[in-house]
Length: 325
Image (cartoon, rainbow, N blue to C red; front, side, top):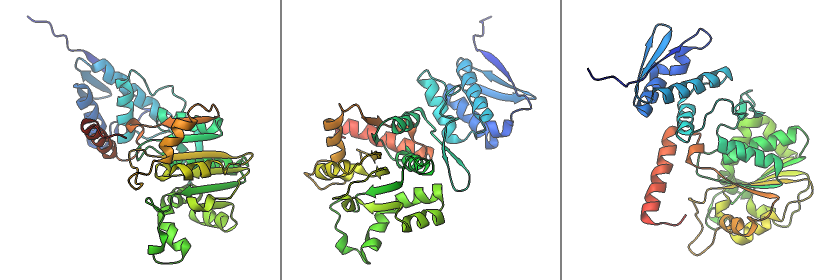
């Protein structure tokens, strides 16, 4: 009789953990683990039975999920996918400190935390450096985390003002073709910054501080000629700045200020022949010790899981086509 080498592991399900919350609606999380490791998982009474050659790997993932629940967090699809990706790289989620590090609270009281190691490194860079570049694809939390850190600095009186800037129109800032006065022309392009600010501070609070000019949400062109002391300054969509605009922006920094620049170098919308100020800045400033360049990747995407797949598919296509980033 041939010996069966299939590993069988039994995991006790104590009353401290909600099995439904752990394994998802209709055991969707459990099914994801089964597909990811090619194992069979069955709940029998108060234990989970795992069978398969990679049963031990699946067990390690489930231990991480228990740890996440012990930290008071929900085990959602995005969190599960990230835990599985960490294990594929030989790392674990349990014991990491970023899950306990609360950056700020939304106006509804929800804690804001770094959700991935890449995000944690980004946050730590913002805390320790005077200028930080957050570079990565859509959905990696570049702008949202920067705004959360700005609000935290403002509330703790580390910053007296918050300045949020963005190139108003991706290809040349031709505002004259849009209806309305100047503010009405630029507001649609600044909407993502407003959205993040409203979610974290609340609309009424943010608008009140904006009226006092304690918070400014402005197109990049408004930054020319200014020097900003004791401020937390964020430039979003920086891949769409020119070299000249980037230099102008960075030299607005005054004493006691912190600058965060965010951008996605895969979505440059500048006219043909115009070099991105973000790419140029990394080449020029990469050796300055007070400046950090943080590169977030597809594994740091915290939106719908399909966003991560879309980003991966585009990256694969562009590599195959030989398209430069």
